[in-house]
Amino acid sequence: MTTTAAVRYETVIGIEVHAQLLTLSKMFCACPVPSLDSPPNSHVCPVCLGMPGVLPVINKHAVELTIMTGLAVNCDIPPEAKFDRKNYHYPDLMKGYQISQYDLPLCKDGRLEIEVDGQTKRVGITRVHLEEDTAKSMHVAAPTGESYSLIDVNRSGLPLMEIVSEPDIRSAEEARAYLQKLRQVLRYIGASRANMDEGNMRCEPNVSIRPLGSEPFGQKVELKNINSFKHAYDAIKYEVARQTQVIESGGRVAQETRGWREDLGQSVSQRSKEYANDYRYFPEPDLPTLTISREWVEEIRTRMPELADAKERRFQDQYGLSAYDAAVLAETRARADFFEASVALGGNDNPARAKSAANWINGEFARLLNADNADIEDSKVTPELLSELLDLLDAGTISGKTAKDVFEQVYRAGISPKRAVQESGLIQITSADEVSFAVEKVIQEHAKPVEDYRRGKEEAIKFLVGQVMRETKGRARPDIVIQVLKEKLNGSP
Ligand code: ADP
Ligand code: ZN
Ligand code: MG
Image (cartoon, rainbow, N blue to C red; front, side, top):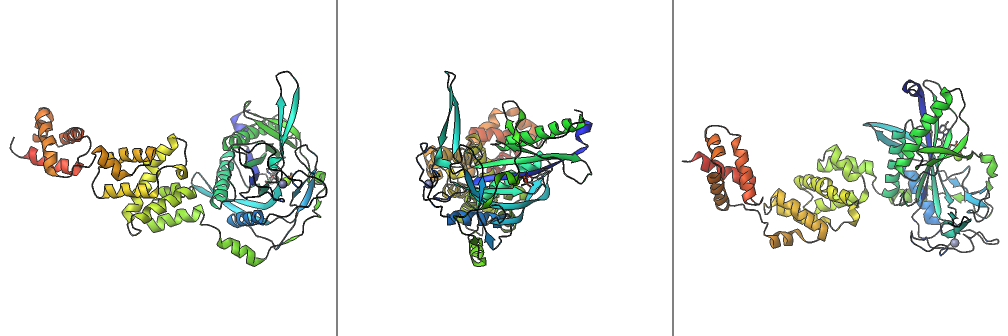
């Protein structure tokens, strides 16, 4: 394939995302939601095992989380919603059908704004609907050569939300931005853990290409088994190149489902795509049609937290933060909350405190968290501890350099910055008398730069300041060091 071929086509992508909802119990039964380390088949009952003669009961919280998600992505919430049976046979589908939603989903016609290369772009959301997850099968190949499959029914019947985008996405970069933004929204509203590693957020990108400038879409291929943002990105890139080559060599892209094999760096054909009529959808006879009153929708709307985009704008307006700082702080709700709590502790009418809190959270703190691959909400540092450190800095009790050391101790051990400072004798030297001693010593030991300075080479003072800082182990205040040095250097030799 040549690079000139690639530029003659436009990529078209629509993504289906599944997210497990953060409810306490399953979608249609009272089974508690298992945790990641629950033993297999420990959270099951006749309903989620698919026994005959039992009846499903709708989990109200799951419906509310889905509606809240719809509101967060600007969907309409129609006054009526319905559950339907999607029929197919697979060992992990206990009843032989999945309760899903077909023609009357809970939410439709929304949009999500993403940002790529500094440009804002709207991606349409076709629908958000509610369904149930399947059990999980595990295929085991024993060393003896025999193979067998195991099934864990814990996952069967967990509430699952499907979010379907319009084919508005035009590149792997946009797809990644869309998935990241969606994850952020789901986490902000507490609808899902939305963790692709853990499998509670899964995505299926649909990819096609068309000649640039041509209206009709090309044949799409659905990519399955994607379990990270990186895999989604890589799989789309690969698929676009593969389809380009197929078309360039005179072939036609087949309608199929392909899986991503990270180990091979390739997408591989899984099966030809099934159509809606293969599923023989029909209304779920065991469940009533849902009437969604406007009062209910509005009540759910009042429970919705401020979302990242709004926070980002408010942080700039209210605290005078840069667009960059505001965006980084608003990235997760936990980080944004940490920031605001730290600022409030320093007195909300203190704009300098907002700036310094932002600097610490996005700088030193982020660096340490990154190195440990940890999240702010799991850190030993609390807004109280950070605020105490900032108080010490503001009062001039410690220098900026000392503050970094102290912060690291707070980060590692969760100790109080005040105590750390007292115990290590790191209190900043603020009196000129104390600095004098070190300055005298440095002047005596470095005759050459002293002479350079006295001859008019002002630059030379920098070296001398550095030496004094060394001498005082970074505890002297630089402005006082400069002041004392100048006094002594400009005085009699
Ligand atoms: P199907 O009935 O085959 O499942 P849908 O119309 O439900 O197809 O669409 C599934 C997903 O595929 C949606 O996210 C949609 O935006 C996307 N999609 C539809 N047509 C195309 C296309 N030609 N290229 C890329 N994505 C597409
Ligand atoms: Zn159950
Ligand atoms: Mg579909």
